[in-house]
Image 1 (tube, rainbow, N blue to C red):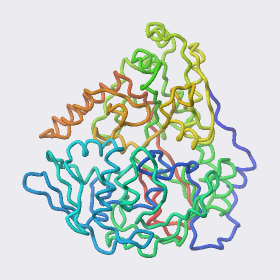
Image 2: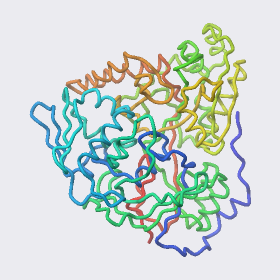
Image 3: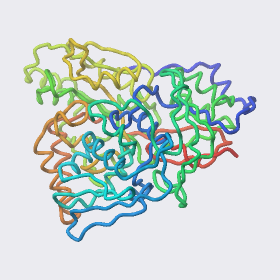
Image 4: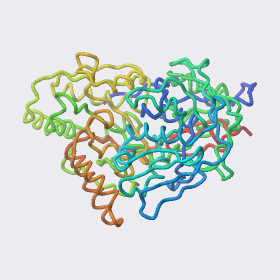
Length: 523
């Protein structure tokens, strides 16, 4: 088994000591993100770190609360026609973009239209939409071809919501990232302070008017208590731990699991579970080209996976913080079933027999993997180890996470910079139902990286949306989960629970899929 990175004893001693550094910038929050921020457009890119950045800069019409209920955010409210075919969403007053222009309904309509071309849930909405438009400056009108009762849930989904940007940016082709970070969220992006691989910075947007309700994940009042937030990219985990321990940083999004015990011993640091729903780890193959367009080969890959190996490599030996999950619907979500029984024996001999029967002819596989992401890097190392044991022709490419994120968007063959396999993780809430879960959706080219194509899954998704009762929805969703596992849309590697760490001088840190910048203050 791959050994996790050894932790220096000197770093541990620093962590155990009380903080001695004085905070000379009380109005600045210094934050260590999970990974480098290389993709800025949260509609074009789906990396978790990009989504987190999007929460700072852009606001949404609706936001999901801790019970996954979509509540008005930029919206004042909405009306739906008796036949369910017309939604009119009224914007609340005093909404401004960071460039000083007012937020208008036409900006929102254009933003929704672009987002709907890329997002899994949005694509379902797009297929049911005749027109996204504006009746006046404050009224968005969405005309549908059939009722879509989950429209507010789609626009305010927990990860990858319909972020609102000016019309001039929202008119950017959905296949290209926008060229500028101008939103209407509680913080302004500071392009002059951005240096990929080093830092990013945000300033409180003075004209942002938060809602009056208490903050509740993505819903309620997004009150910015800091004038400035600095993202400090620190790839070396011992250095990051020391920075948090001695007060040079305020918040470390994802501490290395081996360093958590030392952090917990520091009286100046709080450690808690970041997202009670947990995260699903997974392997994704490029199904748009050889050799993984062959489902028999994908099934051989699935048969080789022993989830315990992956979880111990990435998350350590504390089984309270991880569990098996042989399903594309995580444990704790409504449609979880152990759909991997019989498909995931975790046996290389069984995998070898399937490999021999698949017709695999030794084609080169390019496995892209990050060296600077401790939740993901060990996953790729485990896969590479057994690919070699199986005698497969694997080209193991280890780079930084930002490069992985950029390369996985390539549709080129491996000889021209493409890829065959990558690993990632996602919040359980992002996989909770067929509308948001891109792992059970097979639209092909318009879909998520890996481009699984399965028309039956898309038909079932439409049926799930139109189902008249929860029992029917459950039946359809379970069928979709089984289909995705049988056709190997991805290979689940286990479910785990991340911890986050911050100085005890901070209060108001919210739990959820992202590290939210609002509601946090220094005491």
